[in-house]
Length: 326
Image 1 (cartoon, rainbow, N blue to C red):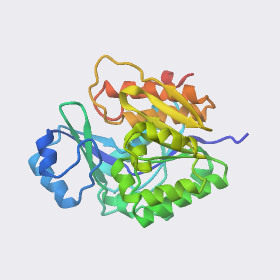
Image 2 (cartoon, rainbow, N blue to C red):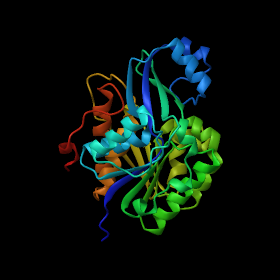
Image 3 (spheres, rainbow, N blue to C red):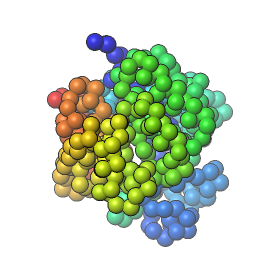
């Protein structure tokens, strides 16, 4: 049996999240689709910040959030992507260090660390608008082969799937992971991401090198271009990869070897903020998988951490190592 140094290696952009309260009129003004992902340029970012003042600034990004939650419950975690050598980049790097997350990439001089505006609606839904900054320079040269070799699970989420340099980095990561016999997982990330790069997603999954595809039901519906959730499961049953479909308040359904495994959510008294619930779910699911647990147990651990997230503000709930004991 291979003795891995890391349970999970997360690959994806790191951001500083800026939280802003807003309403539907704001989304209409900026032509944003509510509850999705809307990438912005520097000018739009500056225009928004002139109109809205963030009430909180917190380290974020899907891959770092998953890494942080997994580390909090006791997982050995590593991270790959780029940070700018600015105040935000140094803050994120220090947080990784304090949480015991391995991060070997050097901070890039004269570049801005990625920023993600998170708009919270009155109904608790979140709409995200990222500015990638230094992340645009991410390429296959940033992939650390030794770190991949030493990681049991390679998890890729949030990378721009429609950009050639990012695609090359993803393909290199997955190819190396399969060379060393690691488990590979990718997150569908967002319906807009699927719309922009559906051909790449499908070509990637058709290689047979990705073991697990994780995402919410809307993203899977976009992946298969269907309008009804029930239509995705017969299609997933035919796939060689395992799929994990999160369904908000209705729990999750994992499809493995043609079988559907349904696990309910963990009930909470009040939902405060849904930001990061999917990242927390992924951290629990993947850590349980790294520990050799069955699919039912993996989904239950994901549901447990997601429940902790939605009753707190922000994408990184306060978790404990006791939550990682099975």
